[in-house]
Length: 71
Image 1 (tube, rainbow, N blue to C red):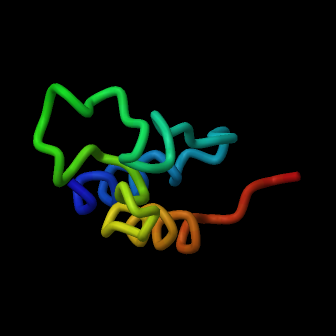
Image 2 (cartoon, rainbow, N blue to C red):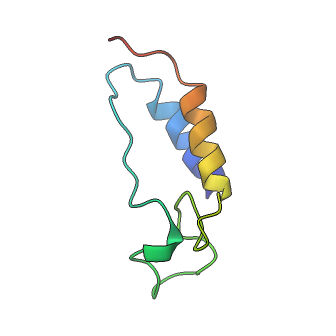
């Protein structure tokens, strides 16, 4: 899932008019997917213990490597 997010962000961050990125939340602790999907991976940046997941690194790398934005 982290690799998919990184590829998606790499593509959309090439668009100079993009001004923000929104997630469904930050941690698995309060995910709306608690009862519906695999509890090991809910597509968020941090796990239930608020430890970084691979998704956090993928998002950070994509943002760090994104082209600059006009002011």
